Length: 388
Image 1 (cartoon, rainbow, N blue to C red):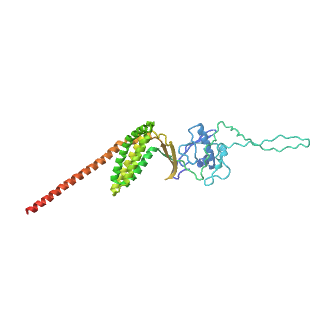
Image 2: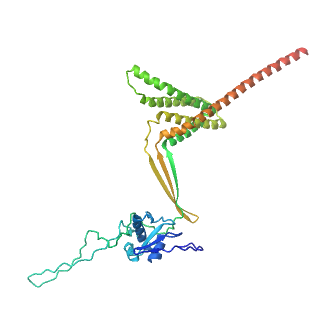
Image 3: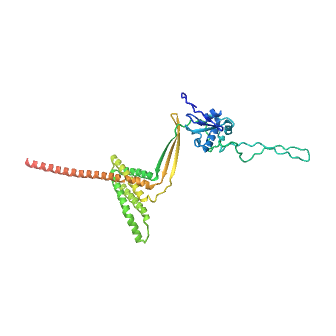
């Protein structure tokens, strides 16, 4: 099939004893190729079956898993017409008709053996021949061809409408780590919390998270040693990450509860700054939590791959867009990546604190200077009144 106004010459097919090879051109369909070389479009099943059979012997031939999708440059195999008839069902088949779905079988349709006649039996009376009864064997007869070329693996019928050869198959693969996704969710969650808290309380939240981390590092070993001594236990050091994570998360929740219990009036600017500080808080929480738990979370959950495919027909171009997500479980890799940004995040927070300190200092100095100038003006005014 050719686009009107475009002249395209397909390369001549290479003929052989079993059939001929053919390279897919633009606007080709299995139906149009069958019409051209086999005389009727319903013989497309023979082309698909023969091509898959050839693929098993020669990898240069394409493998047609879905007859709807044939691409430019694919090498097909077209069998001889007498072989193709085995794959064509009787009855009307063509564009707009119900396709010959029943012709898609797992293997070539075997020939039914001819009925055999049974020998005539004689009796004492007049000999009467017994009629011949056709019998069918259950074994599949072997083909006389040297190589089996008519095989088909995927029983997928072609829809009634013809599909052009794909000009391009697009795909996109995204490799995602479960723990990166967890860090992003925590950042978004704490960004919303920071938006609710506002600027001032969000800064207190960041400081509270840093103090919670220090408390977890210091208190967990002390708690383990105290339990071992007081209760005569033998808690190994491998349990330390659990104690550290519990103390850290408990401290963060306590800080959040304290801050939400405070009454404060917010402005929109204060809420935006609080949102940014909340996102920074979420980053700290994800990094510190992974530091405590990364050795215990390896392999949880299991690695998975999710694929989505979308067919499109845009501006005369047909194709399939395949989106693949590879989810991996690697807390160690996520912690290494997130910890690289940790010094920059801490410096950014210290810079904000330094700016606040300068603002507070300048405000204090301005207040003192204003008080001095006010005292001078009042004292000078009283002196002038005495002179007059």
